[in-house]
Image (cartoon, rainbow, N blue to C red; front, side):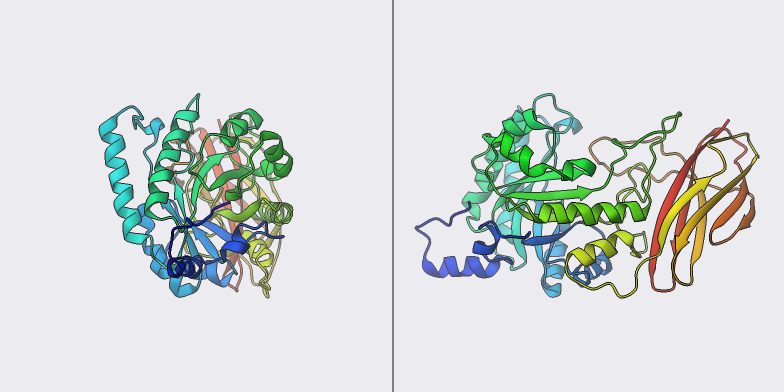
Length: 405
């Protein structure tokens, strides 16, 4: 539990309660449902407006360059979990370099001093999966803990959060006792890791309040693969179903004080649709409908729903005819069919990747529910991307990997 220092004057304590978007007794007294509901964010002001309109009361941002979100979120009546940039050992940051450590601390000190009294600020999230790629996570966690102590000394009002991946019980057991200055443990959960969390946390001995700092459906590192290695992405309907189940499950865990869906925006990571809850033009989706419902707002016009997808084969000769069909429901539907090369410039730890090249193909027929086109003439791995838009500003997505050889 986060406690305000007893030596603080009463006036400052009252100010702290006002600055906290969620009252302290609600946020940290094991509420029956999650207190902070929102999304991890990567977008513009229009995307932020849609997040607030969907019923979110909080947003998580990753970088100090996202500080603009504080002012915009205040106007929209939502709070911000502010990310502090921490050097990543996998990118060459040296935890044994005193000059680099001091420079990082000085930068964070200046940033916290500048924004610690912002009325939209909810908490400080110090780094994100800094331990990724390390055989032993403890050195990076200890540095996060040290920085959390620095932040707490500058700002005793707002809690400190360390965001890590869910690496299994031995991993979580190390986390249980490593970081006294960290007030809340943030865990990034995908697919099945969102279920049974309560038992895993208890078994690991973690008693601190939890935040689900990223919640997402099946990741590309978890998905089934085609024989040539291409991972198979869920449809937007399947992703929406996941969010409904996972949010209901997590809402019953009193240790969880907030859940942030990943990602309110668009991001190329294996594909441009794998993790994005919106399209690149901020179009809403079946996933955002599921979140809106979970956040207590009615959805008056549902997004299109893709009930099934299919392709005539997995492998084609160059120039062969490819056919694909979808079973889709909705009003005034228009389907976009687009072929891209399979992503090959894949990054680790969730870094953004370059968008694969679009490939021009000869379209023989393109309807709402079906398409026929000639396979590319160059052998290689490709994907057929399917975007179904309706007349209400919403869309459904799916894609199908195929090989030309």
